Amino acid sequence: MIQLHEHPLSPYAQKVKIALRHKDIPFELLRPEGLGSGAAAEAFAQGNPRREVPLLVDGDCRIFDSTIMLDYLEEKHPETPLMPESPAARARVRMIEDVADTHLEAVNWGLGEIRYFRRAEGDKANALRCQARAQLDGFFTWLESQLGDAEWMTGPLFGRADLAVVPFLNASRGFGFAPQAGGALAAWLDRVNAVPAVAATAAEAETSIASIGKAYRAVESGGFRRHYRDHRLEWMIRSGGLDIVVQGLERGDIRFTDGFDGGKD
Ligand SMILES: N[C@@H](CCC(=O)N[C@@H](CS)C(=O)NCC(=O)O)C(=O)O
Image (cartoon, rainbow, N blue to C red):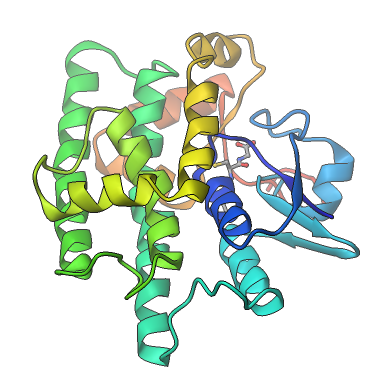
């Protein structure tokens, strides 16, 4: 049976769980030790040298990166397709997924740094949240244009573009930044969350978020070292948080990606 190493709050893991559930593929969930510290267990790191969830294990096949997993599942289990048929429609779906994985995730990441990890408070926190609000409004407008008058973002059926965006929009909504009520994107979000595979996955995330209250203490005690990779770092700096990055690096509670030999780059 497929094993998925994951964390319920990881939007990337959520993408894969929705696909597995929608395709009715049996799987087992595992949670790696040491996630968030930069020192995830060695056995896990052998499957994913990036030491990130999700990691999908299917027999001898070990796959990291949610996008590559979705491609694998689509190729291996073409029944209940999640991709549209035409190359142009597929390309459009992949662009939507990439925007969610990179730009949209970075905004949520920044909001999490403020709310759960207390990187900023008072006026500074408000200024960062203002930036996030404006950026998310831009993404919401773009996503709404991708949706147009359609029921699903993928095409005639629920599919990959829908499942690739919903974990990120649910997270934004959890931070108080929802698409405008009454608008097409808000209606789409309700529709997608009612799909059984999405509902089950979102429920796991909600249960997990309820226990995150004192997460900042794990950072203070050195148990958590936050991973400022790629767009996350750019988000924090361009939104006005350069000092947050510098302080975190000095304290050692912000880290970048380790080398594939497990060493620090
Ligand atoms: N591009 C990867 C991103 C995966 C990722 O960023 N995972 C985060 C959780 S959302 C993680 O496991 N981080 C490990 C850590 O912070 O220690 C994918 O699509 O799977």
